Length: 149
Ligand code: HEM
Image (cartoon, rainbow, N blue to C red; front, side):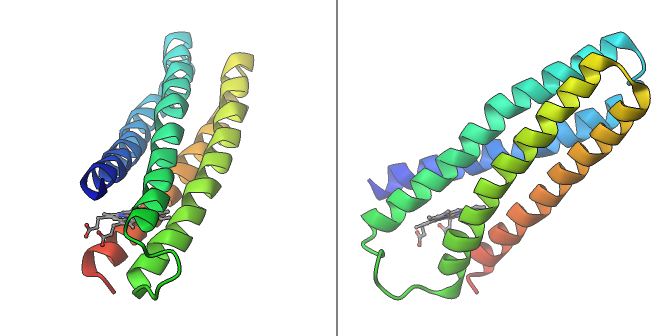
């Protein structure tokens, strides 16, 4: 069971981080040409597909992490710092970024539909910043887990 749960945990993490980085690169490239209606539509589709992929995969990381703790019998026992950090800070990041990126993504889609260029640019900048912050936060968890502080 441990192996299967770790597989889900790491697969969820790969899809989560991978799609964050991919969408940051794609939207950054689209930003310059966002006045074109075709690019605007493509940006809308990208945000919608991203929401469909990223939030479920980050949720898989959370659920498989909780099940791993239960499977390993670690619910009440003493844990090293890296595991506390992953469980508490990592879990908080997951919930925080699901909420934050959903709100920013929905606002951006509304602005893209309305078509006001100034609004679109500010929405894009906020959405991209939110995603960059989330990548840095997730990587901080990966670092703490990798060096096993
Ligand atoms: C940002 C969120 C998270 C990241 C980046 C992350 C990353 C990782 C990584 C890279 C591993 C493999 C470590 C290894 O095998 O040496 C791992 C294992 C594990 N994760 Fe997470 N994780 C996150 C969230 C969580 C949460 C929320 C929980 C629990 C509620 C959790 C519980 C676990 C457990 C129990 C293991 C197995 C540890 C072991 O085999 O010793 N993780 N995680």
